[in-house]
Length: 443
Image 1 (cartoon, rainbow, N blue to C red):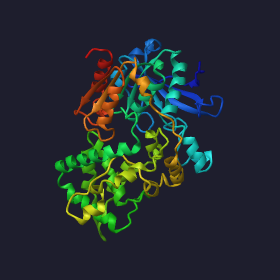
Image 2: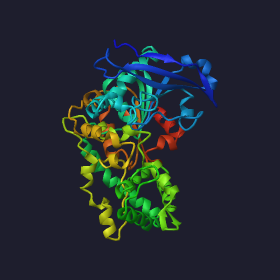
Image 3: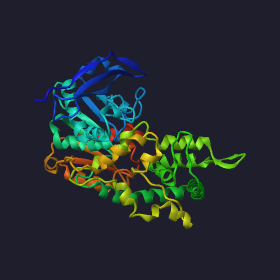
Image 4: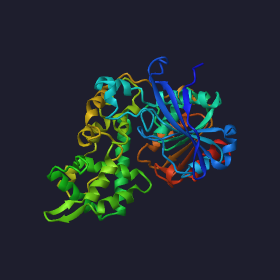
């Protein structure tokens, strides 16, 4: 039996309606070498204040955040879905390795590993397979071996699917929101499916806000005619500006984008200029400073064969010339935004990524990725699984998700257009309530 992770537990403290406990765990960097280098993971336990006396008897629910590269959400009290979960569970909010307080990996810390080659070898241990092995060690430490329920949002759902493939004995149930991955698609397949969805999101955006067609063209014309460096040091090129389309995958993202653009220009003594408010908003939306692993490992989360990802999104984008800002400006059509894709130029435009460019290149060229999913194991799955699949999800292809749903024995889906990819945040208790009812056979 694999030994449980060593851990430390801090004293409990309170927020409105909740009791919190901070946990830290030491786990192997490389699970194939359990006696080798250890890294520290952080997780926050949350229990409803009125159930704190019963906490030891409550079943555990592990939350895995989307990403990659994001720490678990910092809730205040019983926000969003957490309040519903606390009625039935003792919740563990895990910062996945490299994120939040779990041995963060970024431009400041990675040089401690050495040069780009050493950094790339290190980060190769930060995918779903290692995250799930972390979870299993933590589970043995916290539950004494009892299985727990996992809730995976987006990339957290990818991790949950790997969990079902490799360690189903650790799961009492799996709840997946906007995160059923293709079991066998290469990154190229993922992006070939993505760009048409992104184009549809653009059409819906401009149909709602037709005044933004000219506004966007004017901004891109300015960016194309002169080098624009934001007050933060971020170089805003036309392609970088187009990547604001990542907002269009959220429930209120189109509205956020519209409001960001409406005050793009301000009158100055030297003529119209991009406003400071606009620049700050753009930087907040585009900077990878708080989550660099999202950029560095984004395509690696799809890699599981002998083919390199080789900057898949950048290559596939050339197959969709309608996303060329230059061609759009040469005609009279709208400039299309792009979505969830990472390109080599991100490591030139974003100061937070400059020093990680060579590391990212090495990861993009890597070919020794191990398989992430086991279709044979999933075909005989016995763990109750429910998944929210969002119609025309911009981030995770709906057709890929439904194909995977059919491949996992007993998985029940809730396919809805009521929410976008962030439905578990926007829908909160309602989304979680629906998934719990599905796994419990109540629907």
